[in-house]
Image (tube, rainbow over all chains, first blue to last red; front, side):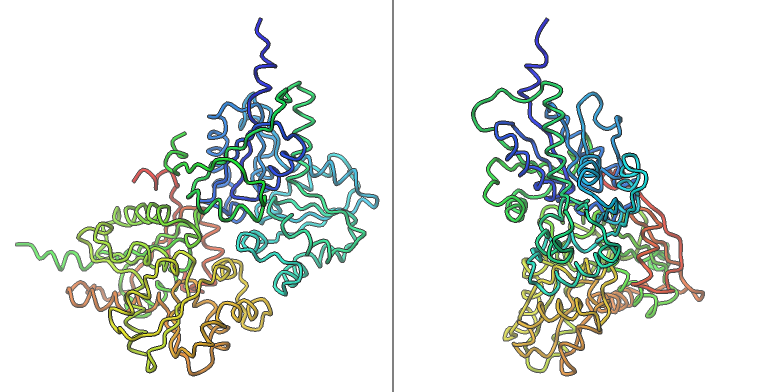
Length: 281
Length: 281
């Protein structure tokens, strides 16, 4: 009998996001497991997802997953807070392939980090409306006090490079969205959208030293390493892995905007696939 | 021989936009020609267009036009600054149906209004990159001095209700984008994206009384009236016309957000069509 595990362990890890936020997860994957191959899909022709309806988000996510699956991967990460919140851990999505979103890993880290049991959650409108983070937290810690807020401008701000901690617009928007959470004396704040770590400095400064920030993308990367290890699916490769980026809009647009997320780590080919192709998969 | 003009004149006017900005054009159409029927399509499942590549914008616009054409209209308005700038007056688009974008009407109004010949233009990244407004202005007035700037945050701000003239974020973003234009002493400013009139108060306050603001959506509505009149295609109806709204995401989402654009004038049915359907047209 062939050793299917050994064969599967050399396959790539598949990661997708509505746009570029998932690259904060890719950066962590590369740091943790430098010899893994990674396939990334960013749906930048239809970003953002977080202001759309549940049905539209599910339809886009289904297409994203099918595209990733067409590359024969060993694991799929929905590195998008919105998709993770709406689709949950749905088995329909990934079939037999090991799958994780960002909600469970972030919630586990938050519950481990909190002392007071008072946890803040920020995300897109769709994420906060879904209540997914709250439900997952209460599964682990029933007495938790959860204060959530949707930060609808954070994704456009990040995508347009308005991120400096000393920028008056950044300071004011951070204050506006986070004041109701800070006022409740949380000791942990989940950055429930993979775009938000780009605003980390401004958020940390406003929330103060006593508050631990949890990056959902980075936690999903750690969780992925544990899942692969427990299934004996970590690569045996000794050289550095490759990263192949796919995007639904032009590769120039992707490359130009990706640097703010992943800096010089953006090494690897960028290929555009058409929206029509995506709809037909 | 049948009077085709009379038959055609009772057809609807078709209007489309990436999202809700085109409603600023619809509001003006209703004001100018209250007995006309209007079909509106807002592609809110894929808004915004202005940060995407030229090819993706053209593909989306082609689908939008084909959807509008499937309703047998007498005229098509691309009430989207981005589509108008990229697709121009392309005959490929609308075929034999009278067609207008927002660029030419806005430019004609700007050239009529300017005394100094110094004209400012603001729009999305794709609009400003295309240079469409500048080319159209120089066709009318070769000696014009044109100062353009892309205001990438204006669309997300408008869509998220961050529009009050006394809001510190609105003030700061308006100053940041418009200072280079104000510094050049323009006497006319084209709001080259149909979302921007929602920020009119803040823009007017910053630019000062000496600067005439041109709303591209409202000018397109006036231009449409002239085109229909010259072709003998104005409706003879005496009762009020109907407006039928179509959208690519949920009708609830459309209705919830549309009020800030069109207020209580949003009377008429809202129907969702699927993205898959749109791709197949």
